[in-house]
Image (cartoon, rainbow, N blue to C red):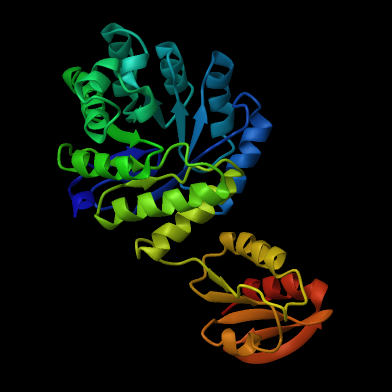
Length: 350
């Protein structure tokens, strides 16, 4: 598999490449210089399974905030830089574990050389990020439009700039909102570079459309053994990105552990807010490291039977519900206590 052949890269206390487990990333949507809000969001993301977090660094205040943020989080922090090479240097000096840059938009070769020099001094990886939306004019002309081939050429050109400066602590990210173009670009790039790849479908959209695009694109790419870290980019709460990424990896057999939630599609027999309850359960179980299946069923008629293959489940009735283990009814509880009852069982799972 391609992943087993990629270069091993250290990001803080995490390791990617060389066949190491695929790590899940997300990005904060707080103002980075709002330390309290940023830390709170990172801690929430960490609780549900985020392995690496990226924060934007548009100015010096944001760069300085990294030092404070790092004191209160437990996962590596990547500084996202656009245009100003001085922000990349400042982010490294204030403690970023990795930086994300496009060497083509931070100025001349001397600027890139300064960034590489500082990164080398501290052994900080550089993620070379190229998006289809910012493809160079000459490559668009060469390929008569935005193409997978152009994206790959652009990325490798930027990588060569850093290699020519004597540095190979590199991760590559190529993204497009066009799912199949993104897939093709990764297939082309995988055979041309030894560096780990961060995979994602950029500007994927809202939770609904973004999840579908990401599941298809990431599924095809990862199933070919391509990709070392992933992000599901969604317009919404970053928590949803982690939930989706974990499910994609589990579905592909690339990650084990964690609770799988199954729920019925609702019907006329449903007498509870099953959609709301199922969403609450799905969010609640993200912080558990149990390898079990939880069923959330809408009625007490077929609930026990439908939940038979699950380790534990709940089924709604009229004003009350059932707690079910291995298809057997354990007890009845008031409807408003179903969620807490399930939580208690999970907290005391043996």
